Image (cartoon, rainbow, N blue to C red; front, top):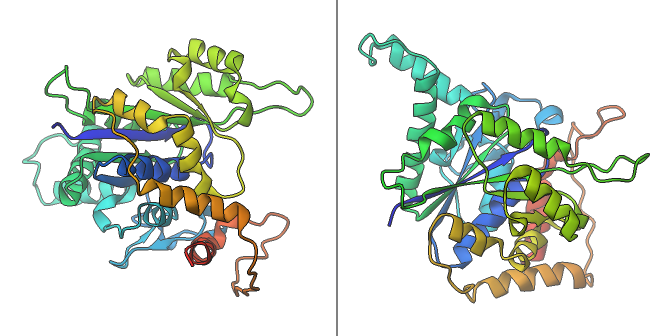
Length: 327
């Protein structure tokens, strides 16, 4: 079986839930009997997340190896129930640093070094992560928005499809559909612009995950499907929820796992019985309020003026929440 890749990318704005979507897709495909590994590709030139201000970027998540990474890595671990390795985390800073060091050491044998080498290094790291994890499917989250040119080109050139009859790659775009208060009408133009920009890179998305609860209405799906050149059933609604751990269950209701498996050419399987445990967890979050505890968290990044970034201590907060849920 050819190794399969699923890429998750945002639209024209960040912070729309790509990390939770990636974690949830991984949970779904794992529950269907496939071995999955998750990779985060961040566009910033920091070598790791440890030097960034938590009030701007959010809290870092520290792997067992000691590597300071993006907070999404914490969600990956909690959703999949396994520890991640440094091979599962990539930043543009890491990549550029590695390529420049190779060039200084004459490892390119005097060749002209350009952006193609950056893309090739990203591809190499993604493939290496898949090999180390011995997975069937690699899910790659590309941080930021569609303007991340080298990372977007990874989807087009990085899959390296030897046999055109064997689909190995699928792009899942997470987009927000705003409803301006003074208008009261959902606007899909930001999503259309994101798709147009991706098409300009030579990339065609196969599925859209839309951050609005009322996308389930047929006329909404039909409009997005028509303007973005996908089937209406490939437009998935993502309603606002109280807990991120409801997302895999909502995705399963829309048969998202089966849609992705069909897109990458893998036989659909029945949901593994282990997914019942996740459904039980989701149900327990809504119904279990018998035991409450007050927990104080001391930190210096809570008071930052009028704007308070809730992600400044998200890894600690989610760890506490998850521990309570799993009691």
